[in-house]
Image (cartoon, rainbow, N blue to C red):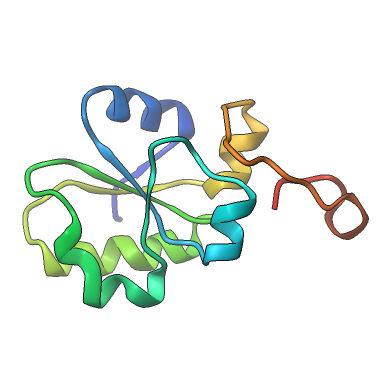
Length: 116
């Protein structure tokens, strides 16, 4: 099983210098994101992963955890021996735990007021 972190655990890792990598699409990123996260959409990751700083733990985040799990698996194979985590539940769980988001937006008619 690959290493996963909860939003609370992710905050502790971020305080220790980890990088939060948001792999959602641009429209999702613009709607709501965690302050300080680096945005590289999943489809661009194979071409851009070298932009990631060496020696830092990486926490991958997406909408619900599926795409970030794919990003995690890719990164673990591409950058051998670096700590790479998947944020369980993605930005949906981050938001549901009341953690801060930048650019927060909702679409109440489409999704019951959940974050985009």
